[in-house]
Image (cartoon, rainbow, N blue to C red; front, side, top):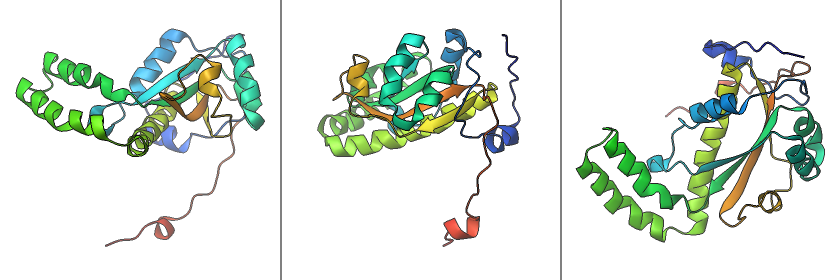
Length: 213
């Protein structure tokens, strides 16, 4: 069966139309070409000194889903029916990419060489000496930003998503052959076309969640 996917640039539809979907149309497939596009657009999210610590494991094969499902606790329906599950990790060695990130910025004309050298002199010692706990805190904030952006990008592409925190975080990296000390899990995001619409949910009013100063 071919499912027609409607893309949108309507910001209100993207934000207010997004729902957490628990069951998907298993016949809807997302090509790896389009998934690459989605991830590239999501990766425009901001990050601390542009270090982009997020890493993605895209589980889109039947074999991969069968491996992931037992690790997903009470979220197996999302895993097994979705077009794919994107496991978001942080790379605790992301400082290794500093030279490439700043060097490419110079090459592409985004910054002059002297600014690159100033930033390298300022940030490399910081990344070389920061504690693992502090680096983890910084990276988790950045991973949260890219995860939310990924879900909004998916909505713009016409797909539904569900962020998942209930899974065996201590096992997932090794299950897929990744170094669990370097790649630390953040969340799973299922993506596909909903089999039924997600439920709306109540949001606390602004006066409850905001203090003005």
